Length: 140
Image (cartoon, rainbow, N blue to C red):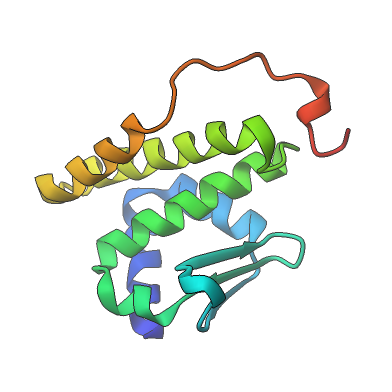
C-alpha cells in the first residue's frame, strides 16, 4: 500500500510540484489507517498528520491518489495562510480543492469520466464569494 502512495507522490513531484511543496509544508506524516465514519482522508494539521484509509488506496489509481494529495495540499495552503476550514471558508476551500483536482486531472490527461466527476462536484459549489474579513482568519 505504501508503494501506491509513493507512486502518487512521484506523480505530484513530476506533474504538480507546487502541490508537493504545499503538502510538505503542512504535513510531516502520512499515515495509513482505517478511519471512523467511513471517511477516506483525515487532515490533522495541528499535528502535521495526513491520514488515508487503506480502502482508498485500493480503490483509486495512483493518479487519482495524486489528486487527493493535491486537494489535501490545497487545504493545507489555506491553513498556512491563516484561514480556518470552517463556516463560509469551508465552501471556498472545498471549491478550490476541487478546482485544483480538476487542473491536475487535465494535466495528467486522465479519462473524461474522472474529469466529468470532478466537474459535477464543482457545480455543487457556488461561485460567488463574499469578501473575506479578519473575523474568518484563524488568528482572529
